Length: 289
Image: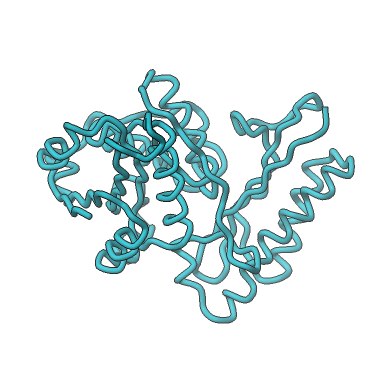
């Protein structure tokens, strides 16, 4: 495995690669990230004529992107575990870890920004203004640096996946987007780098978020359609347990707008604080035709 820090070195290394699988991360890797690298490897293999991955490689980027953090968010304290991350990548069979410095990623002030449409202002975007602008900008820059055949993202960050998938379509980028299912702990908690912020007692409570979303999904599949009442019910249940919900929302899965009676593919999204830790999660719902 190679560790590369500059854009010039990365481009020189990848020049001869015909098939590239890419997993962008901010580091502090966990089993969910490693699962994405395995999916990327499978995609590389599938694109290879001999199904053995010949001529292809998997790249993982590690970069904590200042642009996507608000002024009162945890950019400075976000966990940085580079040595451990690279060992995990090595064990997973990753070919290249691209770990640019901030100067390499932003050699000049970033005045050209990717401005997503209205989806950036709802749900997480309403709570974190500018977040998805920062995400889209850094990912587009990374795409231009890596030039992947396939890019793999986890659906735990569901709104992010929709923003980036739409960006690839709208800008006609020659990249296959693979959106992978959320990886969960045995008790249902979605794996996240920020789970490390939880105290022992909070870690025991944390799976309740997924449990409440799963109950809401069951109610929808059972025929209930008063989404506003169900959303309020979940928020109240979490509040009673000491959570501070930012939002609980049932939306159309493709554009995250409020669903109509005819919509069959839905997603339940949630963000809530447990102590000082903000957790997000989602559950997809497909209704019978």
